Amino acid sequence: MAFSLEQASLSQRPLLAAMLSDCLRELGADGDYPYLPLYWREVGRYPYLMLSDRQTAGFALVRRLDSATVEMAEFYIKPEWRRNGLGQRAAHSLFAQHPGGWSLSVSQDNPRGLAFWRSIIPAEAKTEPLSAHDALILLRFYYPPR
Image (cartoon, rainbow, N blue to C red; front, top):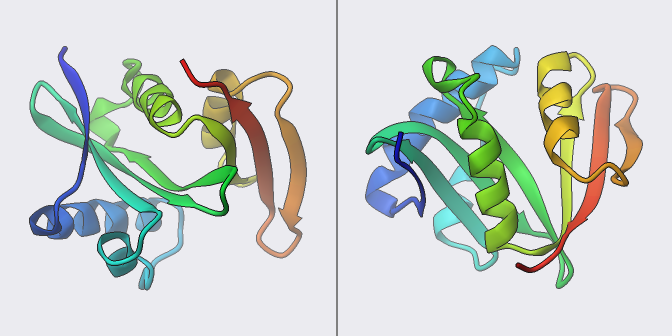
């Protein structure tokens, strides 16, 4: 299985938007995602597509929070591509492309997602509640340059 991670072009935005809708629906968060257009307009925002054997398998939205930290704003693997290591490869590729401090949030109502992230981020990652209302957990960690 050939894996690649590429920055999504503006012409690929509808493809990414369709997957984002699936992602939000799966999380029970139907609605608009007003930040998506900013990923092609603002410096420090990076839209990525994950490809397996040249087929689109998922996406990630990464944004720079400050000079030392980037955030995994969204990360999604299509259901048919899950449980084969693609998500781990994609996450590690993203960490390597943006070494340094990382931040990501996961809902406590998403135990599979939380288990996935805890299995691939450094064990010393800081964990803190982000929002009692949304039951979000914030994970902060450092990924060294390779």
